[in-house]
Image (cartoon, rainbow over all chains, first blue to last red; front, side):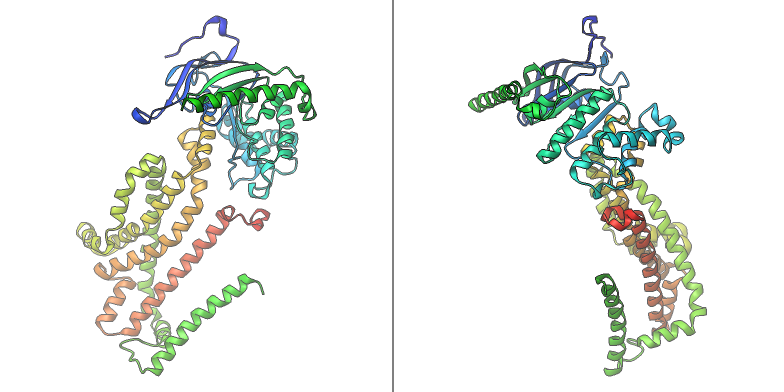
Length: 277
Length: 257
C-alpha cells in the first residue's frame, strides 16, 4: 500500500507522520519513540541530540527503512519509505571498513552494489570510478592513501574513509550515527570542517545523531532536541550561523548561548524523567 | 638469529629428538620388533617395500582428497545456510552437534550396506569426518558479522547474495582456512577407518593385513606414511591460508606484497 502525501507537504523530502516505534512485545515492550512528527527539506542538515535511549538512532533507522514504524507513516521523496529507490549512505561511530580491502576498494563498495553504478562497475572501476574515489579521498585529506589497508591507518583516517564510502554513490540521504564520537577533540573538529565541505559540495539530505551539542551547532541547519522514556522531540530550532562555519565561531556569544540553551533543555528533560521514576 | 628461525629449528630438533629417543629406548630396553619396531627399521621397511606400499598410498590419498573436496563443497553450502541468520544458526546448532558427536566408525557399515565395500565408503567417511569443522567455522564466521556492517549493506539495498559475496564470505575466510587444516587431517582419519573396515586397497587395508601377519614394521611404515601425507597437506593449506587471509593477522609485510 502506498499513501500519497498531501500536496501541501510536497516540499519535505523526509517526513515522519505520527510515527511511533516499539521494541519487544508484552511485558518487555519498550516504547523507543513516542508519536513523532518531523519534516526535513531536501538538502537540509538536521542534527538529533539528546540523552541515551531517546530514540535518535531509531529515527535514523526508520528513515533508512532498516526498521518499520509500529504506527504512523514514514515518507521519503514523497512516497512511503522503501517505495522510491532512494540512495542512502551511512556512517557510524565504528568505521566498519572491510579489513581485507584497501581504502580505495572499501570506498568502491557502494558502486559495486547500488544501481545505476553497478551496471557499469566492470567497465568503469579502473577508470572513471577510480578517479572519483581519488578525488573524494583528496577532499577529505586522504590523497595517496588508496592503497593502504585499514589497520595501517589511524581512527581519524578510517572515519574519513568511512565518510567517503557513505558519499561515493551520491546518496540523496546521508545518515550519520555519532560518526565522530570516538575521535579525539582535534581530529573531531577537523572532521567537522571536512563534513561541512562535503555537505556543501554534494548537498545530500543529512540526519546526524550526536551527543555533542557543539558538533550539532557547528554542522546542522536545524537541531532537534529529544527526550527519553518515551523518546520524543521536545525542541526544534534553526541554527542561524552563516557558512562556512569555523571552530573559532563556536566561541562567539550567540553560538555559546545556543549550545547553552540546548544543554538546559536536555538537562531539564532528564531531571523530569528522573523525578517520574 | 630471528625468533622465527629459532622456533623452526627447535621444531625440527624436537622431531629428530623424538625418533632418536624412540630408537635408543628400543635398544636399551631390548624391545622386540613385534611390539615396537625401531624408527630405523620402519624407515628401511618404508624404503625397501615402497613399490608394494605405493599402490595402497595412492588410493588413500585420492579418496581422502575427493572426500575432502566434497566436504568443502557441502560444508560451505551448509555453513552458509546456517550462518545466514542468527535464528538459523541457533536453531540448527543442536542438530549439528548431535551429528558431529556420532562416532564416525559406526557409520561405515551403513555406507557398506548402501554402496558396497571399496571406494564409496572411504570417500563418504572422509567427507562426513571433515565436513563438521568446516560447517561450524563457516557458519560462525558468517553469523558473527558486525550488525553495523549489515546495516550499511541493507541501506545500500544489497541483495542477500551481494552481502554474502562482498562481506560474508571474505570475512569468513580466516575461519574457513583454519577449519581446512583440521578438516584435511580428519579426512585422512575417515579414509583409513573405512579402508580398515571395508576395502581391499589403501593404507588402512595394508595395515590391517600387515598386523594380521604380525608384520609390525610394515604397520608402522603405514602409520609413518599417513603422518607424512597429513603433514604435507596441512602445510599446503597453511601456506594457502597465509596468502589468502594475511589481512586477518594484520601483518605489514602482507600489505607490501
